Image (cartoon, rainbow, N blue to C red; front, top):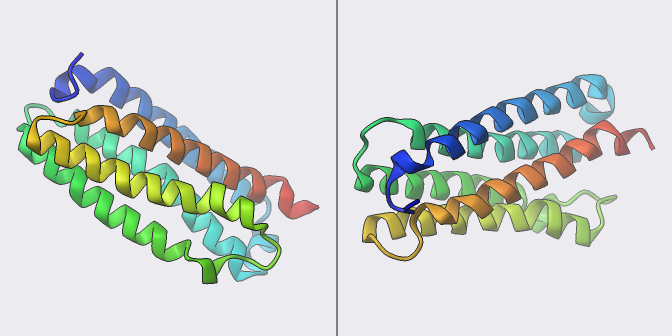
Length: 165
């Protein structure tokens, strides 16, 4: 498998899109079960949107990789733009001033800041290396997807279980 040929990544992309859709559904269940507690404070509402973005990034990336016969330069540009947009939005949402008073610093770093920076850096690296034809290509997408899913799942857990404590 090559990190520079998107056709070779179609099975991975299908799996990512399916998992992302399922996890987004889980998030909607978590929010709907605890909607009163979530809406009671701005911190949890922001975390809900953050988790949604964490699940949507792999959905968008997987969908972009499934478009047939795209030139490598087009996919590279799309990944750079997705990384800049998603990373910018996530980093803005997860800046230190938006950390809730009850949210421990370590939790904020691991669940909110780390995924935001990994997504931005990983998608930019994937896009730039695709454009250059060297440096790893689509292999950079794998940690982006894993970190996005783990960060989103951790936040979904907070929204589903921890808000009731």
